[in-house]
Amino acid sequence: MPSPLLSVNNLSVNFGGLKALSHVSLTVEPGELIGIIGPNGAGKTTFFNSLTGLCKPTAGQIIFADRDLTNKSACFISRQGVARTFQNIRLFKSLTVLDNLITACHQNIRYSFFDGIFKTRTYKREEQAALETAQAMLEIVGLSEQTHELAVSLPYGDQRKLEIARALVTKPKLLLLDEPAAGMNPAETQELLSLIQYLRAEFGITILLIEHDMNLVMNLCERIFVLDYGVLIAEGSTEEIRSNEQVIQAYLGADV
Image (cartoon, rainbow, N blue to C red; front, side, top):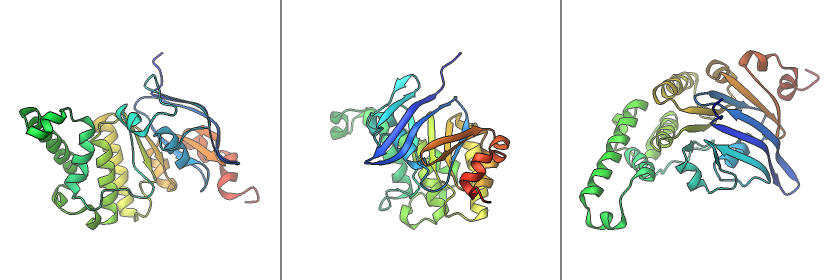
């Protein structure tokens, strides 16, 4: 049997006496689109931070594409093919839409310091390839007409698209989306759903999605993991999660 793309084994994260994650274990197969849900403070973003090197696990192991990523740097993890967006948008707001993407493309650019100083043929070829990659991605996400606008001037929904596009130009195998629909109106959310479905089909990437919009999660994801107080309390299909008593209690309370 082929190995899972991602294996998380007994992952724990403590902040002093606070257990943000406690012995979380899960696997993700190549090409899956998986939702991660749970009440506020359940440890969802901490889980993403651990996967991407922004938070060091207290215990446990993270295996991605047969490589041990536990306690590796964010830069190293990104180069292995893991990209993410953030709950609070983190664009380079003083740069243009195009420059936001070209900056991300430089992770995969291959030319030397010498090439950069003397603007060699290799430098020009690599920079042109980065420009073409960025322009193509802006076309895909529907931002080609805003190429030269500053990122800060974009409407909120377009800033979300730009952040997803910036993650995608790094050519990830695994894309982590942290509440991509947060702050969006219903029309923007529906557009986002269609975009994620298209990107998954077009690029064949695996997607993990943190989201509070249950309508989006239930219509988009094939499997769902549920965290509550840092513990993985349930996993399964949308129908299994929808009817799981432990999940209902975590969201609504036992009395309800």
